[in-house]
Length: 315
Image (cartoon, rainbow, N blue to C red; front, top):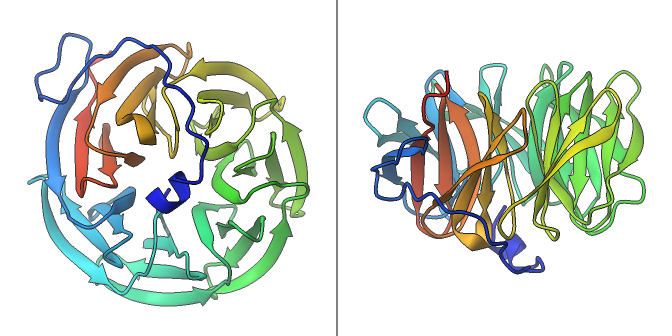
C-alpha cells in the first residue's frame, strides 16, 4: 500500500511482542538473516519473483525495477508504469495495476510495456486465477476481471456492502477472495459465475490477502491481527495479534510474512500453528513482501530499499 493510503488508516497502539532483530545481518539461532539490502531509490512498493529475477514497483519513480538475486543489485528497469504498487506475475508477464486506472502488462524479458488495459478508477491489488487476471478497484469497491488473451475487461463485479475501499485479492479453494478497508467481511467470488458471497470475519478492515493453497490469509489493518480462513468451510481458523498496520502479507514455504507498515517491523508466522516466530526490525515502512527461491523480499517504501530475508532452516 502507498504511504498516502497508509496515512488514512487508524494507527492502533503496538502490541508488546518479543522482538528478534535481524537488521544487523547476524541472526540468532532460529532467526532470519538479512542477505541483502538493495538500494532501488524512489518508493518501492509491490514486489514479485519471476524467472527473470525479482521485480519491484517504484511508486514515485513511475517504473518497474528488476533486481538480480544472484548479485543483489538493480539490473534494469521499465519506465512509464505510473503510480503502481501491488504487482503479480502470470502468463510470462508482470501485471501492474495503476492508481490512474490502467492495468499494465509488462514483458520482463523484452523489458517493455506490452499492453495497457484501460480499466478506470484507482486500482489496488491484482491476482491471476481461472484463466483471468483480476484487479481491485479501490473507490469502485469492485473487482474487474480481465481476459489476458485479449487484454480487455471481461466483467465488472461489485463487492456488495463493501465499506471504505476495495483492497487486496488472492485465489484459494477454487475461488477468488477480495477485501475491504473498513467493513467486517471478506468476499468470495466464484469464477464460474462471477457470483459474490460476503464472508463475515468479525474484524474491521480485512484488507490485504495471500494464499497458502490450503488457507486464505488476510491482515486486519485497524485491529492489528492476521487471520487464517479455511476456504472450504469459510470459517476463520486462527487470529494472530501482530504489530500495528499489518499490510501486504505473503505465504512463503512454511511461514507467513507480514509487513507492519507503521511499526517498521516484519512479522514471521508459522502457517500451521499460527504462532509468531519472530518480529524483525526493518527500515522505514515495510510495504509488500514476496517469495523467491525460499527467501522473502520486502520493500521499504520510505527507505528506497528492498530487503532479502532468509528464514532459518526448519527442515
